[in-house]
Amino acid sequence: MKDSTPSRPMSGRDIDYDYIAENISGLSRIMVRVYKDKVQLSLYDPCGFPVDPAAPYLDALLEPGRRVCYYITPYDQFYGIIRHERYCLILGPTFEMVPPRPRVREFMFELGIRQNYFEQYQNLVLGITPMPLELFLRELCLIYYFLSEEKMSLTGFSLYDSLPVWDGRAREESERPVTESVSIKKEPDDFFSTHETTAFEKAMLSHITTGDIPALQELFSKHSAGRAGKTADNYLRQTKNIFIATATLVSRAAIEGGLPSEEALTLSDRYIRHCEHLNVPGQIMNLQYNMVMDFASLVAELQNGTRYDRFLRGVTGYVHEHLTEDISVEQMANDLGVSRSHMSTKFKKETGMTLTNYIQEQKIKKAMEYLKKTEKSILEISTFLGFSSQGYFQNVFKKRTGMTPGEYRGC
Image (cartoon, rainbow, N blue to C red; front, side, top):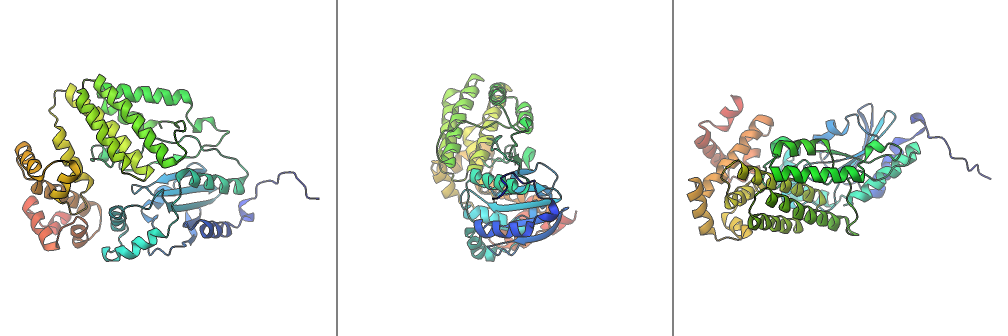
């Protein structure tokens, strides 16, 4: 008869981490890496990627931290981190839904993969097993329990991400992806209580009503929104339901702060419509963060006497959202629900420049950023930003900056 007494956790030298990683990868069709003291021992890749998708984030993934946590990249990919003794297992990427083609293209650019391999890379992405975030977290908890015999619970979910995708309004303050945590039951400081969640919500709405942007940013930098009550059986639907509830609350707070009710409700409806077209919870969280900041900014502009214009916000927001694409003015007008002629005429009247010039200006600003912050070639940058040729890109760049891209990079 076998002894039913629970066995003691195995020490690091008794655990075959490679065996565990290989089988996790084979069962889930998700990449798994094994590190010891930050040195990679092995990588199991069931899809056969030419470059490890985690490469841009490895420094962050390997930073000392909680024993089990997850990491969401700017491209809505999930990575799971399990730390046990001197070892670290990194699982991922996975995602709720297969990312849209523009997102895959942008990520390929960051990885340094040539764009003519797009179709092949897209097929590799399709080989990754999509997984609801909660299911992914449960897998992490189960693996950690096998290694340590410590039970963990899923608490402390954040409703807000630090990477807005709507119009870039707060992008500079939030360049770094956030690392979320899976809480351990015996450590109550790892999760938010109902009281703390309510306090967070009250503080957030108060800052919207007063248009206090710095206070909001400080609030988001220090706290999560806590875990919401269950509103749907499906995680994606629950995320959307939370978004809709938040839109209602923040629009009311903005109206209380002086924003005209018609504008507040119209903007809220537009955000909700945009949310309903998204199929990745991470993107919805990003949109929600930016919606909160957008309403607060409008209240601040109103209270400070600064002129603001809904039309211009819509157009400029669209351009920022699609900056790495070949932006069509006709498609923009269709997406914004206005006629092309009206949009072009009004934009020129309000800004003194044509839409085409504005789009070029924003693309060149992005190109300047890539030239200074990356080692991407001029051809790679021009192609990625949707210019028809490198020569055309160089001509536009010099016309707007007075320098060639090469001269600007060297100065």
